[in-house]
Image 1: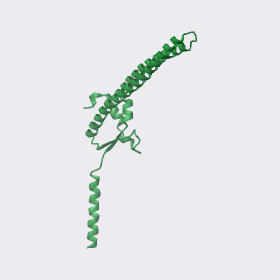
Image 2 (image 1 turned 90 degrees about the vertical axis):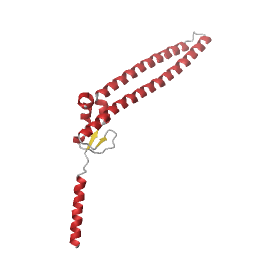
Image 3 (image 1 turned 30 degrees about the horizontal axis):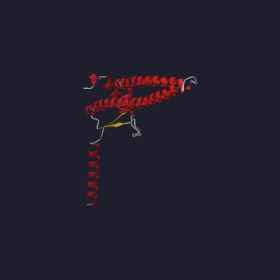
Image 4 (image 1 turned 30 degrees about the vertical axis):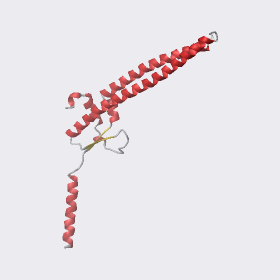
Length: 172
């Protein structure tokens, strides 16, 4: 009787082990940071942001130059007290204008960056989901945040996702 129960328990354990293998999970990994940097959308977004930043910097430089010119005039000892007072008021006004512009420019760049990042991520996630469904992948983990300690490079689908994002005809 004891042997029968041990044999039954062994068979039961074997069945449990076999059935757990039937539910094996297929996992893949993707580096969304690389997708953002290497996809055409990501490259275009970076260029758009650079253009916006350069335009804002140009305006800021012009405003700073005007402030320097005002300071030179203020340091001129040949101008009257009334003229100096007028220049100080103008300097204060222009300085406040510069600071306000810098804050607005910074916020505009930040909002644009958030907008393009969300647009790219939304597209990438859609492509990743479609790819995972088509290839029987049960889970896709993101690697750029450093939360995954190890993965087999064969399971990394980053390059494939970048190719799919760059070639819209292959997405469907």
